[in-house]
Structure formats: C-alpha cells, structure tokens
Length: 344
Image (tube, rainbow, N blue to C red; front, top):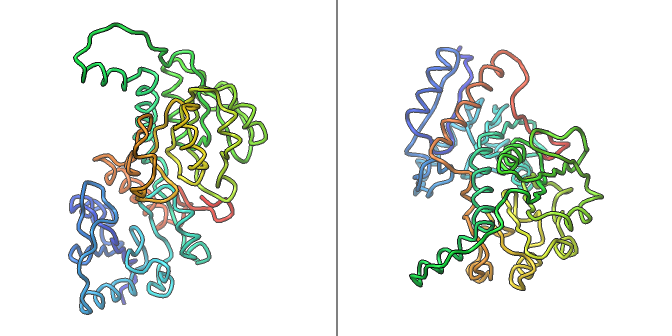
C-alpha cells in the first residue's frame, strides 16, 4: 500500500520549480503536475491565468486527482468553495498569496479543517519598491518633469524631496517593516501603526501609534502607507473623516486591500486637491471599473494589483513551500500558517 503523501500542483507553475519540488520530496512524496489541466499563464508568476476549456473528460481527471491529493500547492481554481468535499484527504494547502483571509471567509474555507500557509514575506521587497516609487513620483514631481519634456521646456525648479518628510505605515508585518526600513534610509521620519498592540518599534520606525491615535496622527504626516491585511478590524479603517484630517498635499500609498480605505472619499480628496497624490495597487472592486474616476485623475498612479509580482516570485514561493514541506513531514510547526482567530 502506497502511503506517501500526494502533492497536487493546482495552479500554473514552471517546470523548473515542479522539478525542485520533486527533487526535495524525493521518495517521501508523490508530486502530481498535469499542466494541461491548469490555466494558461499570461505573464510570469500568473497564478490564475486564462482558464482552459474543460471537457467532461478533463474535469473527471481533475476531480480524480483532487480526490487523491493530501497536499495542495495553491487552491483549486475550478471550485474552491467545495474543496473540503472534492479533496477530502487534503490536510495542508500552500497558498501563493499573502492575503488569503478575505478569500477564505468568502468561500467558507476558514471553517474547514485544512491548514493553510501563505506566501507572506515573498512580496515584501517588491511592495516596498512600489511604495518608494509612489513616494518619489510625487515628492520629486515626476508629473512636472513629464510636462516640461512634452513642451520641450527647460527651466530649473525645486522639489521638496523625501528627507525630513514623515510617513505613517499602517501594518508592520514583513511588508510594512521593509517599507519602513527603505523610507528611513531616504531620511524620512517613519511612524508605524499596529492594529492590535503597540510594542517596540521595528527598525526604521521612530514611533508606534495605536488605532485610537490614528486621526490625530494623520494631521502630522506627509505620507500614509497602507500595508495591513484586510480583516474585520481593518475594513474601512481609514474613513472620510480620517482623510479630511490629513495635511493638504499629503500622499497615500495603498499596497494592502482596497477596502481598508474609503475609496470614494479618497477620490474626492484627490480630485479636490486636498491630497497631493496616490499610488494605488489595490481597489475595492477589481478589476477597477472603467467608470471609476480614479482612472482620469492625473495625481493617481494605478497598478492593476501587480506591485507585488516580479519574475522571481514563484521561485520564492517554492522556497517557502519546500521549507514547509520539510516541517510538515517531520511534524514541526509550519511557516506562515494562517490563524483563523486573527484573520491572516
């Protein structure tokens, strides 16, 4: 009788990374990768892809693979809500995303007995880079440079620059800490906010505030960076009154989730000029509807929820998976395990 755990690769993954999983698992596991049953990728590290035409025969093959799987690399894209029924032997699933709480709640998977691990940490560096790009874009007045270039106009001018400006980073997980370190290296005064507790400031952070201090703090900062998970505690954490409390000309960077901030109030403040600009990677509705006025606002950078995606993403996710595979097989605690009580 074969008792080796079966690992099913359930989202697109390059052959080189499948080979790494097979090599690391050796004869302790069976790795199943049926590329013709998975979506076609549109770009490197595309975990959803374009769905293939699934015939009854292909669906039957996929259902059979799910039924025998013990471990999943990513979610079943065809019927995620019924994963416990379709894959009754699965005890652990490695996600390819960091923020899976909202997805688990909406599908009911947070009530299952499956253990979920996330890709937390993989996206910290890319998201920190996007955050710095957004801040530099506005503080170095790149729009003005583009206007002058288009007009073939040469005139020296002055910008404020980042040094001495103050940023508040909401969420001090791996992403928030990477952002804080980078911002501090640019000479910024960085404040941080943890939603649950205060605690000692991490590297680069000069002050920790708690939720009750948020509105007062917003009146003293130049940049608001949202880098927290979306939970019931952080949903609409930044409301219209909070945005109104911000300094005129302040910048917002959102690398969290769209629902963390009141998007309509944000658009109003950007359109009126109260806020100087925003670099947004996440939106309340995705894809961002074509009728959204955010598309037409000149002081908004729109990223299609791609700020975290770089060419090395799958390599880094597989690194986490292989670490967790060793932990799982030896009965040790898993890295980045989703905690239902926290929602992330």
